[in-house]
Image 1 (spheres, helix red, strand yellow):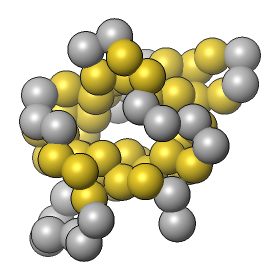
Image 2: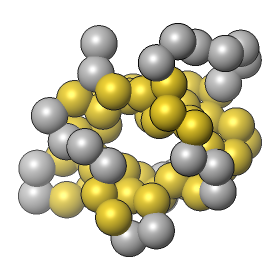
Image 3: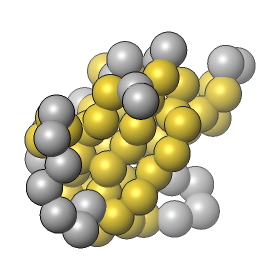
Length: 68
């Protein structure tokens, strides 16, 4: 399992999830899902995580900083 980041909103080109979690492995988004309960080792960032398609695949950004 990669790193888990949670935020109030996770926004991608085709979807917005309220209270979402993003799993990132090697700097690339592996999955995005609704936060339904507390998950161990999840980093709560608050605010909005934005998912963008880049040359290496889908990547997640918080305040214009890439999440790795």
